[in-house]
Length: 486
Image (cartoon, rainbow, N blue to C red; front, side, top):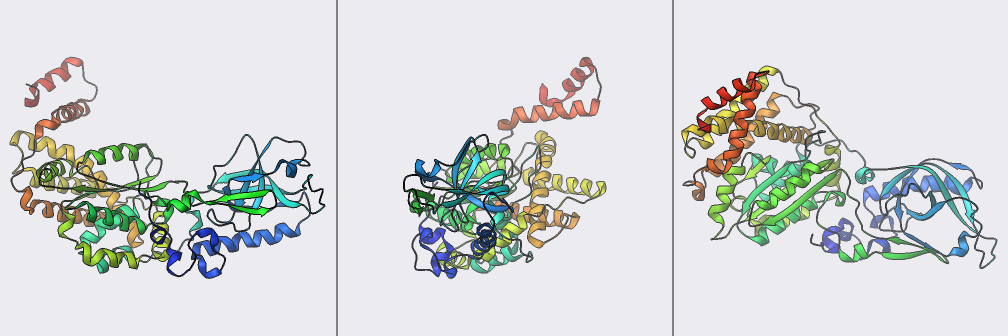
């Protein structure tokens, strides 16, 4: 993925004259979440400096960083099979650096955030200099990995804040702003299913598509992005903490359970690849797909979108017509600040459950089937309409539930009721009518033959479900009566 520029990646560059993160030292050079991290470790460090040698220590969170240490520092370490690592309050700046020894059977990943539950204070002496002034370190007895977004404090969710920022800065209508915010706010992971939100759109030009994807990603904290940090940040820097001891700080992100993948290209195959990755991801994997049309690919993209309209949670037919890039994208970039990150992280920590009655579930299903038949009635042979609406309804309902959960997060709602599902369905219908009213789309027919195997499989699955415990002969007779198997 593309490496962003330093001034794009680092929000603190707007109010600091420092170029690299490890050059910072003034309080104003750091973001609020970084200052909180520094203060937390500062409190622990004061206690660490007071307690005696071999004393047990309180728990603390630290970033693990690579370390280079001369063997002479390890001469008097004593027995034990340990591996040495560096610790820093921030991964990209040497704040309260510390030497730590981990049992060799359980070693944390470099640049990951860990919580040290149990440790003891030790002292290292340099046998080469024979100095009696040593360097304090710790032996870690128990630790656990923390999520990469743990550093961001919870804040009260401001209802609709992300939507309002999008509305105000790119002149989007409310339903479109809610559609665009959905991969940012995401949807909770469900075991055995997927998490996140996938958004696919057709755009006129690659430059616009790229800038839009980049700007939307910048509304997320770095730990959630697929765009890479600046090359200088990834290279990092070795920092001396004592003669013969240095740690390496860098802007290297360890992906956690939240991720947004931005893809740009001329075919929906890109989305298929990302969808497979999403399915295997144990967390919230959102996708922002920008399909770039040209004179040769425009019609084909619209054909693909018709077939895939119900596969993605959000499908936007032509985003280029709704946003004027030159006028609005720079405004949205300027509006991004750390408060937006904190809102997104706090929203993503909510897991609102679906709370609807069986009757409401039935009403939702019937309404979705009507919507799909409306989409397909003029574009599909009559023999396929019923089965296609049944097939697509199942996927569409699951998508709407995820979109409704995203809306619940955005509005600070504790549960997803029928009104939110109806809200998500209305947004879906707005996007569909945008597609239906597009001139390029008007003469495109739905090619049911490309889904022939899926149609037949779906019919057989339904027959088996209806028949329950039936003999092979009964199943054969029922399948034979269906006109799609002649």
